[in-house]
Amino acid sequence: MNALKIFRIKPEERVQALVALLVIVALNALFIWRLHDLFMQPGFGPYWKSFEHEYHLSGYDPLTYLAVTDWDVIYQVYRHPLLAFMIWPLYLLNEGLTALLGVNCVQYVVAVPIIFCSFYSYIFLYRIHREVIELGRWDATLLTAYYFSFAYILLSLIVPDHFTVSMFLLLTTLYISGICIRKGREFKWWQSAILFYITAGVTLSNGIKVFLSGFFVNLKDFFRPKYLFLAVILPAALLWGTATWEYNRFVIPQERAKEAIKAQKTKEQEALVAQMTPKERQRYEKKKAQREIVLRRQAAKSGKPMEDHGFLKWTDITTSRWQSAYENLFGESLQFHQEFFLEDTLVHRPVFVAYRWIHNYILEGVMLLLFAIGIWCGRKSRFLWLCLSCFAFDLLIHLILGFGLNEVFIMAPHFMFVLPIATAYLLKDLQTKWLRLTLLLLTLYLFIYNGYLLTDFLLSPIHVVL
Image (cartoon, rainbow, N blue to C red; front, side):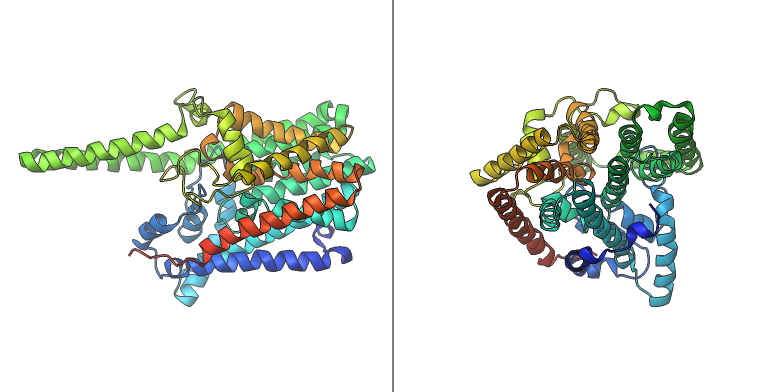
């Protein structure tokens, strides 16, 4: 498929594309309005401490805003190898606008790619339902709207983080793969290489899904030596080399500088403590003990890792898997909890929050039942098995290994699209008004419930601490 043609809005998509775009722009406008006074301050001084203190949007980090304001390699290099370099052009644009207007335009600059990725995520998911699964227009629209009514999909449309970009890249990959499967085309090595380098460059684990796409499209041809070398080994080696160069060039000097500053501060603090009176020293030790308690509580929420170094330091072997599944993975991802709304797990929010009403759990069960029946209905579809294999990989790293398990709901844009895709096969097999009515009521309820909580939050003023 031509790289430019894929972004053209087709005649049958125009009305819903306009509605989707208006909703996405409106939510971003509300988010910008909420934090306008905080972000638009001129200069790059101490107000960023205020920004970090006031910015609360669940477990999503403000790193993109920080990098676009004052560029640096602030992401974990081996998890997000290319992300800092992708943001660099936005930093240059923001620098120019700041010099021209005298204010920090970071929110507006970051909103542009967020809106673009959100909009085309909607378009490509619709096309998956319409062109790959071959549903009618109404059914394809209904299931696409159903997906975007999920709590953390709705939230992802405004968050200044990499998850929306990942969702866009993954849905693009799945759409291309689905068309290739339906039309009997090959997933070419250069397509796989480019998609892997970019997708894994944003989030390393998502690169595996590009390889899975190559396998499910090409089947045994995936293992041809030429394809394996050009589509798998070469781009993986290139990305690893990029990450290693980036780490040596940017991260190591930063770490050494921080260690030197930390050593100097420790030395100065020891000298200061030595000059304290007994009462002052007692107050100092009390504050130090309180800080250690806070750090231990945060560590407890993150769970115990398998190892304290390497990639295994991000694992978790102690957090409850069952409770994580129904309260967070299939709970908070789909329906916001009203208690501790959008609070950060590493700050105030407990790892597990219960819903106020039993009907939230009933609706969760209905959505999972539709998902499970849809899997059975589509069990012979190679495309569905591709989507399920991607979902299984996410379950492996989150539920089994425990990566990000304490806030797994923020990862929803990486995998939750599998729910409407599987449900699409049920709708394709069971063309009844009752199933459509059930999905319509679910979609309307989720939009009203999640939308009300989110917009109420966005319309609430904040107190800026300077």
